[in-house]
Image (cartoon, rainbow, N blue to C red; front, top):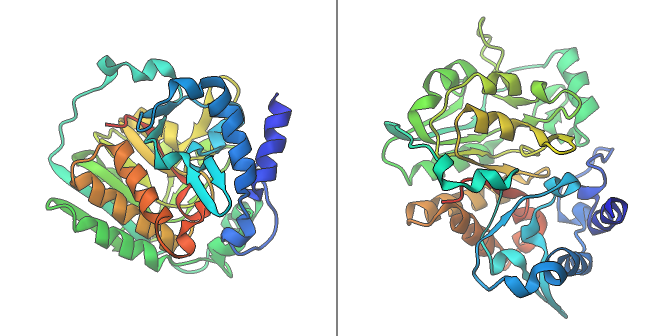
Length: 339
């Protein structure tokens, strides 16, 4: 039942406790405290018992989630648990997500005509003090106050390194950081790019999802306020094969029964993006930068998107340091076209 599933997810980690966690806490694996035993139990219930006989190693999995499972990355399910030896579902299967099985029809795929490869935004200049209204609004929505230092948005130096490292994989690229990472520029040029990567703060308003915001440069521009909001994304005309929203909670929004999540993902798909990579919880900027660098390196090596993201996650799992914990690699999921 739904109640049993909610209880099971809550036992796995505070990350899944109805999406609301109060307090100013350090966002790391110790706080997230992801329970691998419960992940193994959930694997048995969601995968092994109903469809285990149908799934072969290496098979591509396309998940059409329902209800609260929109908030859960199947990649972190534990398939084998023997002592200290842990095997995750992502180690044997590339995984992607779609909101409807009808969207899997290849005839629905559109040819994209773009002239440039990569548009990357990272660590915009957030300016000085934010207005009291913005500060109060953010504090009413974001359970973690670490997005602010006082009443200023916390800078993201790893995000800047992230986009500059990613750009090395592309010859036709445009990278904007600081004051250059403006909303006005994005709206003018985004339609020309095959890959769009935005590494910055994101604020999800699940009460009014059309007003969720991607925080760009606060330039004092008279026509744009530096907040790319969901309703504005709907008005864009994109030709992107892939949009990556590299920030906290970028895949979240308002969950509507029978419709899925109303938020940035749906807006970018409506605007023309064929697929997105987004996060399902607050992410660590250092490990995120590493996941993204692996992901784009794998893409440029010729891998399809689902296998490129799978390998990037496995590369962190096989690391011999703190980034092996699923908190650091599990948040990002691929939604939409996986090829």
